[in-house]
Image 1 (cartoon, rainbow, N blue to C red):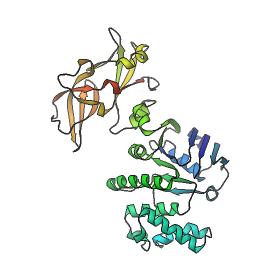
Image 2 (image 1 turned 30 degrees about the vertical axis):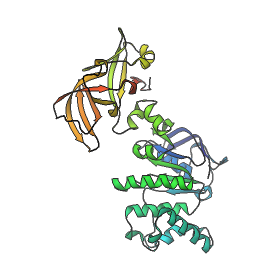
Image 3 (image 1 turned 90 degrees about the vertical axis):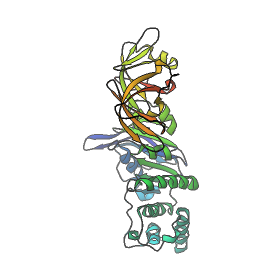
Image 4 (image 1 turned 180 degrees about the vertical axis):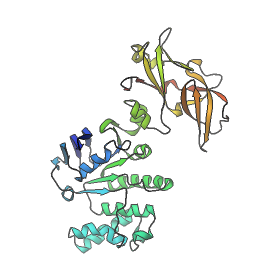
Length: 362
């Protein structure tokens, strides 16, 4: 496998700066996920690594060798696309073998590699079928097999699960994770789905407008987001944001219409310089629950239920507290009705604060 280094990577399209000074170091055998909304530059970055897009400036190195001017074929990289791109007139065996035949591999070596990949992916019984005879998940396995037979230094995945239904996406996520653990490959994976990013990546790179916003282990991004964008993008349902003012007195307080909460002691020093200024309070839905008689008034507030979403294992309460629309993830045994008043308590150890102007975490 291989170590991949992106240094000061930039891409311009017709004067538009779509990838901006991206610097990433991807370790040997690491699974890195690039995630962000449409148009954030993640796929363009991947295509530059693959050699399918020309670099405007910067360097891409694989195992210490700069590959900027190498053709895709010479980079020894395999890419799995969103659309499976299988040859409809060839069976599964020949679809997987085609790239090796074009590189003049011996017949015995081709057969060995194809059957090994089929065994790894559990598609031995499909080798004589045509793509039209396969389900979406089976076609995606064939596309993966076509990449595996090449024994590439780096695997690139461009939203490979987007065309699958929800249940199959979950299944394929698990299989991709198992496949990576078994093959011990270096992999770069692009998705707009933060659940895929969190469950698949050893490291997640969040992008917006061509800029890397934050990178780190999935739970690090979830627990310690660098800014409001990362906080809102990572986690499902998204973090709640409430514009508020920091008020001082016997303690520091967060005040917004219908909400008054004490700043937790662990965050007081960081918020002290914001007294009298606007901030954004961030609370994840899972940090909220219906209050009981023992909850402190310092960390609870009244709200009115707008929508109840029963999901079986949990209930999502869409409530309104003053002017703020808030989502709470609560126990499925909770019984509340629309338009009912409910007092919610929050976990003070799990609140976040962001600068109202820069939106950086405080």
